[in-house]
Length: 88
Ligand SMILES: [Zn+2]
Ligand SMILES: [Zn+2]
Image (cartoon, rainbow, N blue to C red; front, side, top):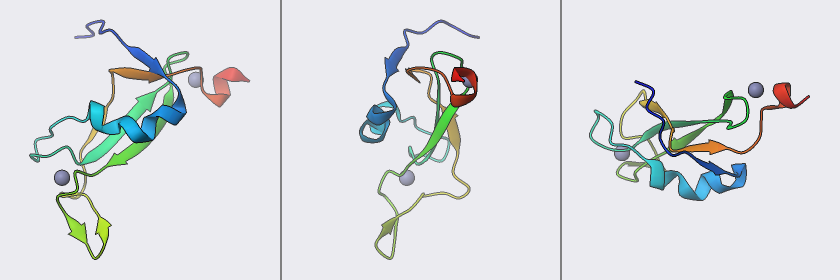
């Protein structure tokens, strides 16, 4: 199960502009969903990022095509460092 993929370590600031790179196609048929990122150092949760494909717009806001949105753990990248609790 836990195949050791080559994991890239990135800075937290690199997340926003690059989520599209790690998007997955969910059962819903599009990549809209929540993408969770983990720390490389301690393995704890770094945070969750919303990602919308742009296929659905409500008023002028891009929204999830499906609610509730599906979620996935991004394993291709980890966030540099450890969480605040582990760093203290
Ligand atoms: Zn979508
Ligand atoms: Zn931690």
